[in-house]
Image (cartoon, rainbow, N blue to C red; front, side, top):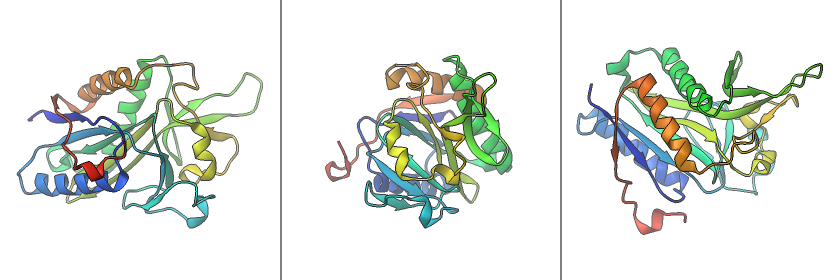
Amino acid sequence: MTATEWIIQPGLTPYDTAVRVMEERVEAILRGEAGELVWLVEHPPLYTKGASAKDSDVLDPDRFPVFETARGGQVTYHGPGQRVAYVMLDLTRRGRDVRAFVCKLEQWVIDTLSEFNVKGERRNGRVGVWVDRSQPGGETREDKIAAIGVRLRRWVSFHGISLNVDPDLSHFDSITPCGVVDKRYGVTSLEALGWVMPMSEVDVALKKMFERTFGEVQAAPPLALPEEERAD
């Protein structure tokens, strides 16, 4: 299998630009004109509403731009300090099993967190990767550290995962993240767990664990985005 292209985009990428790039790449993959791609970006502060989102999940729609998106899932936040990995893979070549694919995405994140001695876990009924922050003898406390939301077009995936490295966690206050209203469940980040590091260090771990789960990657230069499509 040909190595998956691996691109780290500098600066902040507008969300609508990211969607356009993904749409174009998926169509090129389907036509046999391009290979698979993992595209790592950061966004300016914004909220996205997935296919299962409710309007009421955005508590303050005027705080940041709100985008309707066709990915699975509900409402989530993207912003600086959060590594978003858009994963455009051909599942016809990798086995047409959506559940197994999502499981692999979760494992990719869990393995990446293990590089920093953070134990990420799955939870039935709650999509994403969670960290148990319960205290001995205290009540349950679990925080989401990574969200997962994908879409398939004729078995080519797009959208992907978002991992909280060091975002402003107060930006999550204006939404009900992924529709979870139980106060025992919140959000966290590597920084909040005591890991202060550059994004580049997280990218190294993501690349290492992606190759372990999905196969070889080949680094490629950042995409040349038009000046008007840059947010930084």
